Length: 82
Length: 415
Image 1 (cartoon, helix red, strand yellow):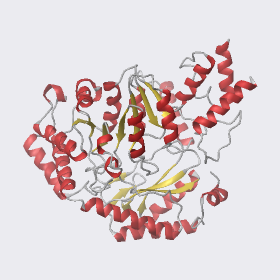
Image 2 (tube, chains in turn red, blue; image 1 turned 180 degrees about the vertical axis):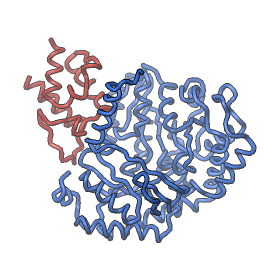
Image 3 (cartoon, chains in turn orange, green; image 1 turned 180 degrees about the horizontal axis):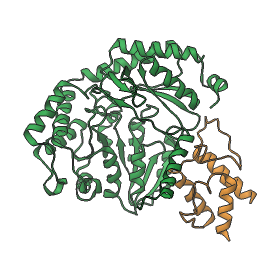
Image 4 (cartoon, chains in turn blue, green; image 1 turned 90 degrees about the vertical axis):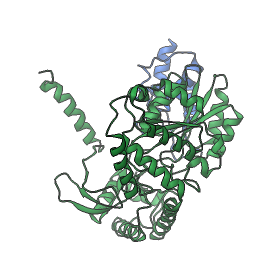
């Protein structure tokens, strides 16, 4: 789980933050509700998770709530890893 | 009755939630023509107040231009009030064709198709030209109507960091396996007023075999040395495949939009774009008014030159007064306040000073980046600009923000 959290966090920092961004992101930082990730750009994160973990995340489960923190994202991914 | 009390309650609760989140949009009525000086009824029922308007998209000051009004009257007299038909049945007049041809020539594109609005153009264009084998790669801060259009299309989509060319290149490399790639950006971004670096984007599109669509709604008519738009500013007119733009801002401000670009893509829009196929086009008075607008700005750069002067002068004076602004060259001037309440309080006090501006906060702009967006117009005279700067100086002094940078404002008010 910790390895997954590190990988997801690393992707989010690389994909969503600019080099000069002041935002610091941790495992429980809000991503969607803080505006770091929006519902439009969330598609990149979903694609990354599906490719990296060879899973399919149904749209009804890939909600802004489920994608709001690294912790909640990893819970969702683990559920589908079965 | 189907609309029961409990059903009504659901909607009342939702409206209350919007109010609680500070996102409720109040009614404001303009009781005059759209211009630099307007009469406003706000709040609803209040006595009319004369204010200077610094929040309209009336960039070229053509919304109430006498020649445009006259042309609209002539269109009404010669071609009637409405068409009562969509374009492809019996809703296309010779003046629709004339406007399309004039827009193509003005923008330097092969062909143009009118839509009821640019919102409709953006909603319809992607689905008409792309399929599930294709990918759309969009700047993260594109206009909401482009986002809606992209979501209506079966093509895959991806996003890149705002104006970050390294990130765009990464995405173009990632999607080389798709049939086609379409990069999407605003020419001028409406909240920040910044210009997409079209020279660099065109270069990347050429290197990675991608088409390029630019929404130039906040640029057409005044950006570039003859006002053709952002593609003229960066000298890449031939590198653009599609432009979407509006007649509802600088180009007269009434309504209507268009897609302009490669003839095959425009033909596909004509055959398949749903907002084009299933709604009436622009009414004859608006078509004639828009033709006049294109004639005015094709014949002289006087209005865009004045707007450029106004922009430069206003920015210099605001800088001297100590306001914190996002740097830029466009007539969209974001006065950065970072804190949402501060932005709304200052906008309210500016209104009391006779200056009509609006505060913008999350989710319209990123969290912690609240601002007042000042929009300049060729209709503004120097004394209008001076009055606006003076009001910002007075109100800014009241809140103690003059001369403060980003961190100092956030330290004082939070974000």
